[in-house]
Image (tube, rainbow, N blue to C red; front, side, top):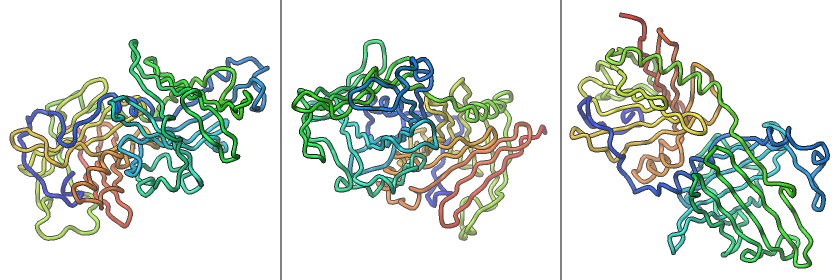
Length: 393
């Protein structure tokens, strides 16, 4: 919502087509890898099926498999690139001790190949638990990290059957660990078309012994954890689709701090309707008086839900400021889901001089047959809420 972000608005007819958003061109494969990773995972099915002999404490030499809870979040870390994922794994469950804390940066190299750079934190404690805050990594610098040297990038390729596979071999990647020992690194990431995620990594010393193996027996096989609240929320939102031609009248419930004179919302009629409903997408145009430039788009993703704001000119072309929003990274409820500004939106806001918006959190609420709420909140006291009456006329 442009005015709610302190931005100018543009007018567009209600029937304007939703074309590709403006802005820098996107690398479809890099976007697909990142989108395929983000979300919450665990290997509970793999662990449950493993023989008791493998359910032993991890060791360098022995065979074992342990239970891991993993969260992958796309974050804004400009010093590392534009496709950066923060991963945080915890032993046994979401409240367990952190076992792995990394930043993965995906890019194209000079030859056009897809590659991934590994980064470990010198001190990860300030970032522990930040997997639901994409903007928390804005100030990360390479000096705070330990990266693998050139030649240790994972090469990624799209599988013929779908999904992606990335790997680096110990013959190509040799590092000197903090202990002073030189080792060759093997790492493999298998993002499968069936939605599973495979991972393994090891370091072998020059004398042939292993320095570490994660895990040794078989690759981790992570499966995405179901987000029942997000699914139920989308089902609730889809109740609006039963009357697609209906217009819902809204009112501003909260607008803090108070708007300045000339605010484009003051005294205007607020209306919402349904423009598109599919199994995975709901588009809700929002009109402010005669200004029909705004559409809220809620999509189901592999990791949960995503909210984007689509803004159009009168000819249907995208405005400079469009396609911003974020993913619902917290569980939320069946009636309320919140979306923090994602890395793409943070980059957009920064590039267009609207850095005040990089900490935006948008929330949607619905009580079917009663009311729908759009909310923008920002640390420091900014709160904007519009309530729409869903009761039958």
